Length: 125
Image (cartoon, rainbow, N blue to C red; front, side, top):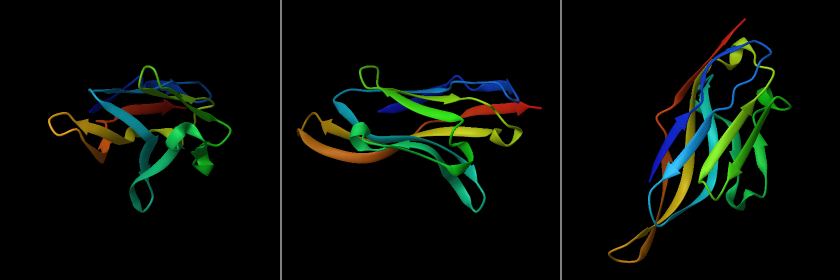
């Protein structure tokens, strides 16, 4: 399974961007899926995380009320609606998914994490 992010780019302070993360492959399902970016003291910190089954969405305090994560299960795609952009939102945003995949030769299930390659978001003031 591969994750491909797109839709980042250059935005204005106070403006909006909507990056997306698309998963492709065969015989898989996505459990939890989220967006991450570099954070102080961490390589990557959570921005928004949709828990397994979509029961809840957790946001970093710094983006609450401004960012909205959503998921289109049929398209295996996750979106991050970023509103009221701030200069401090500038970062590379990474998508991460917890995946369950069927190993077709053996029909066994395997679970693993997958990261996308990242999409650059730059906010100009």
